[in-house]
Amino acid sequence: MKLYMSGNSPYGRRARVAAREGGLMDRIEEVFIKSFDDLLVLGPGGKIPILVTDTGVSLCESLIITRYFDDLSGGKLLPRDPQEKLACVALESVACVLMDSMFVRSMEKNQRDQALRSEAVLTRESKRAQRCYDVLEQAVARNDAVMREGAAITLASIAVISSLGYANWRHPEDEWRTDRPQLAACYDRLMLRESFSETAPVF
Ligand SMILES: N[C@@H](CCC(=O)N[C@@H](CS)C(=O)NCC(=O)O)C(=O)O
Picture 1 (cartoon, rainbow, N blue to C red):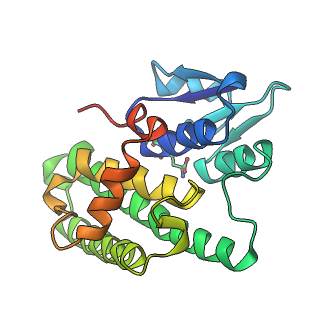
Picture 2: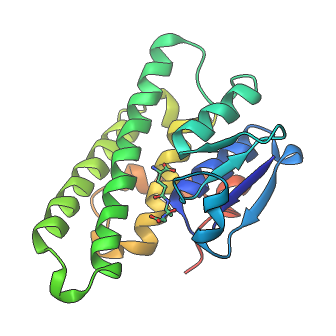
C-alpha cells in the first residue's frame, strides 16, 4: 500500500501513527508528496492523507484511513469493550474538532491576504480550540481509560497527540499547556513512543 502524505500534516500524522501502532509498516510505503496537484490522479479531493491499497483502491480522509488500519490490525487501535470504545471515540471526536478548528485558523492566519483575514473567524476558532483543550485536560485528569498511563494506544490518543503537536507548530500562542498539567504530562509521556516522536512536525 502507499500512503501519500507530508511531514507536517496533522491528518497525515494520524494515519502514520495508526500504521505504526497497528503493526502495518511492513505493508506500507510512505510517499512524501511534492505537490498537491499530483494527488488529483488519485481522487477528487486533492488532500492528504490518501491511502492507495494493493488492489488500487484510493481512500481519503484520515478518519476513514485510520479505521481501515484498525481493521487490518485486527482491532488493535480501538477498545473491544463497547463502553470503553464509545468513550474512546468520544474523545477522538473532540480531538478531530480541535484539529479541524486549528486547521481553519491556520489557513485564515497564514494563507489568506491580510486585508481579507477575518478576526471573527480567528476568535471563534481560537475559543473553540480552548474549549477542546479543556475537555482533553478533564479526560486525562479523570484518568479516562484511553489516556491512562500504560493504556494501549488508540485512535483517540493518536488524534489527541497529533492535534497537540499541530498546536505546538501552528498555534503556540494558545499555550495549551498552561493550567493543563495532566494533559501536558500525558503528551510528554506519549511523545517518548517512537510512533509519535518520529512523526512529529518539524518546524
Ligand atoms: N478531513 C481531511 C482533511 C485533510 C486536509 O485538509 N489535509 C490538508 C493538509 S494538513 C490538505 O491536504 N490541504 C490541501 C488543500 O486543502 O488543498 C482528513 O481528515 O484527512
